[in-house]
Amino acid sequence: MNVFEIIGGIIMILMSIALVILVALQESPKGSGVSALTGGDSYYNRNSGRTLDSMLAKLTRYVGIGFVVVTIIVYALDVYMK
Image (tube, rainbow, N blue to C red):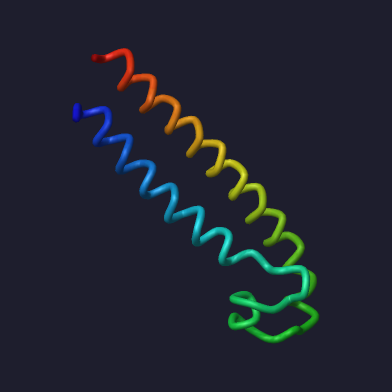
C-alpha cells in the first residue's frame, strides 16, 4: 500500500461515517425514527424541519458524490502508480 491508498482509505472511512450520520438525522416521511427522539411535533419543529431536511438531503448528496469521486481517484492512483 502506498501513501495515497492509506490517505484515501481514511478519507473514505470518514465520509462513510458522515453518510451514516446524515442519513440517520434525516426525517422519515412518517415522522418516526431517530428524528422523533429529538423533540415533539411543535409548530417550530414542523416549519424548521423543511429547511433542515432539505439541507441534510443536499449535504448527503454532496458527501455521497464526494465518496464516489474519492473512491475512483484512489482506484485510479492504485492502477497507474504500479
